[in-house]
Image (cartoon, rainbow, N blue to C red; front, side):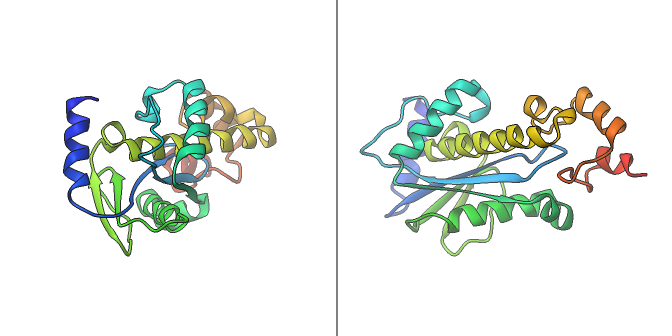
Length: 203
């Protein structure tokens, strides 16, 4: 186990008694689709090898870990905030809303929630924000994988409805291909109209 990871775990383990949930999100930057959050409470008796920041893993490895996390975690939950909520609230507040929904969706209530980043959703239990937590805290790494795979699957499904935008390839991010499709076809119902590249196509 990396020294930094062991230090983070030791510090957190002794600070609270009870279940610890990790929380992360996927989809803050794309021009389309919901922002997805996940919350995971791992089972120490069923270790999962290879947990890491989802962005550092291949799609195949993420898919395999997704199934293993779902099978071995004490409980897990995914939730989202819609494009309409993103446009109404802004992307930060919508992300925090999705995180709150993910935590509230857990079958077992955690005593402590560890959130990737530097902002916390409104929660009734103790919570701590950890910058780069998806690389140092296994429960957050697991949450990042669940959120990423869930959102990628949403993009693949939505691609079937609007194939000319290329969601299955770029996952909604502002690639040259995506921007060209936006200019040619205009926004679809799942484009975030509060994001500048989309708003410019509405003028």
